[in-house]
Length: 140
Figure 1 (cartoon, rainbow, N blue to C red):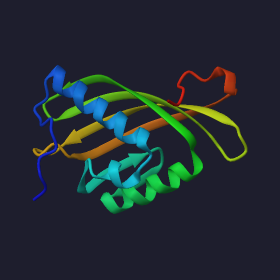
Figure 2 (cartoon, one colour):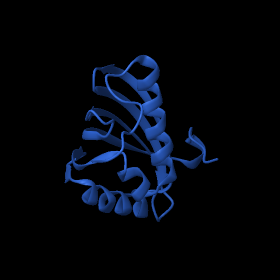
Figure 3 (cartoon, rainbow, N blue to C red):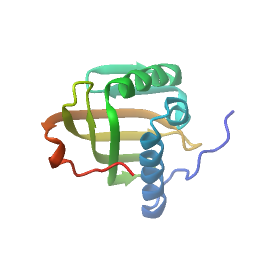
C-alpha cells in the first residue's frame, strides 16, 4: 500500500486547484520517474491515440515524449471537478529537433483513487505549429 498522495478526494475547490498545480509543476520537471509517481501502479491512459497501461508504461511514454518535445513548458487550468474526478484544460509549447515550435492544446479527464493517485487519465490533444515569437509560455 502506497502512502496517501494529498490532497485526497472528495475534492473541494481549494484541493482541486492544489492537485492541478501539483500536476503542472511535476510535468514541467520533465522527469518521467517523478511524474509517474502521481499515478496508480495500474493506471489507465488514453493520450491522443496511445493507450497506456500501468506506471511503467507511463515512464516509457514520457521518456519518449520529452526526447521529442524539446524545451517543453506546460500550463494547466481546472475546468471542473466532482468527488474524485476532474476536468482540466491545458496548453503547452515545445519545439522539435528541427527547431519548429508548436503549441499543443487539450483537455484531460482525471479519476483518482481514495489515496489521491490518478487511476485514469484521458487526454485529447491538438498541435498548432507556431513561430518562436508567437510563444506565450516561456521557460523560467
